[in-house]
Image (tube, rainbow, N blue to C red; front, side, top):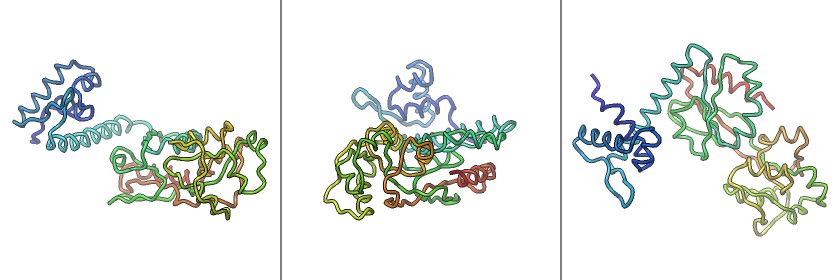
Length: 292
């Protein structure tokens, strides 16, 4: 028989560990402050040791409790995934996909409906992460998509799409700018990505132009914001062509000097080839790689 503390106490402890606040944990669990405090005391009594301590107006976990909270969180996540799988096992086959917000918004969402029409028995549940880090998403999703190759024991990584950054501009702004040569872009409003601040200097070098410093311009945290700004004529953006292919096809954006492009490693998908849903994931990957 497994020796496991009371489940309610574990839920309360895990919520407190994330918020480092009994009040916020109580709000999340929709219970009273005293109810959460009681569950913490119950768990401390179970282990005969302190789990939290005062830190000014807040509380903090002891080092040992913090490590335990990490393991409890992973276990609760796995339980949630297993329950979701069981709930959907009698109907559509659900696959969970984790991607960055820009890839989800600019590539996946405009195309997922087409996949669903072709595969009505496979339900797509899309989640996003604001970081390129992937390890924390692997256990909770069936397919993780990132802009670089990923490695993890027992999992398979597949190349999904090429990553070629091109300079794009709205037709309205282009009509206002006198751009005949690549060097003319140095006096134009350029849009930058905070995570790839050296991208424009790299692009100019690809175009055969040496520059001593990065041209000034608006800086964005996400590609989808940078792209939206370009569509609305705010400036010229340097973004992965895959993320703007529909905008180019529908003439919301045009590519400037297409021969000058920065070749990245590509977009990749990481999944478990031995998992029960592997066949559905493979089916989705095959469809994705065939899409424009």
